Length: 222
Ligand SMILES: [Mg+2]
Image 1 (cartoon, rainbow, N blue to C red):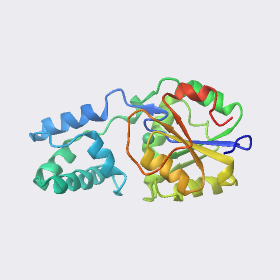
Image 2 (image 1 turned 90 degrees about the vertical axis):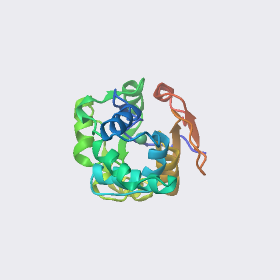
Image 3 (image 1 turned 135 degrees about the vertical axis):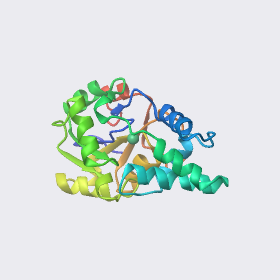
């Protein structure tokens, strides 16, 4: 395993660098309530479907996810669409750093270039970076949600490597999703650090596992 030649650290944004103070679970519960539908699925179901769906907007993405879950469970698709439409998008300017994440960026930047590889759309993610005051921290940024080809497809990683003119062996990727971040980075030939905030089943094994962004204050690959 490498790594003295690791020059660059790729990072996911949502639930890796930052999060919303009001959780996805809270907002999903609100959406069921507002739609007058008895809750019939949970956030892990949502995340599981999310990795398999692409769409042009957040609403369309939710509609496809929720309808897919309803289909799996034999529930009324109309209920799923009502919940998808009642779900309120979080305000991107209200994001907060995960514990240790801001110091992790400082520590990593001392010895590496940083790049962002996120599945979100450019406008929303740029608003989060600005709110956090870190919009100038990344040598490259790929907003996969704006192109339709999202992690775990290796394309967002390949494009970021190309933008920086580096090889996959020179970078590691840090992210909170085994299915999107770890599998995607490995598909692009990179090593991956899994921020294991929530246990997740997947067919891939991360090269490194951390429990907190604080663990990056001394990078595990050095
Ligand atoms: Mg994430």
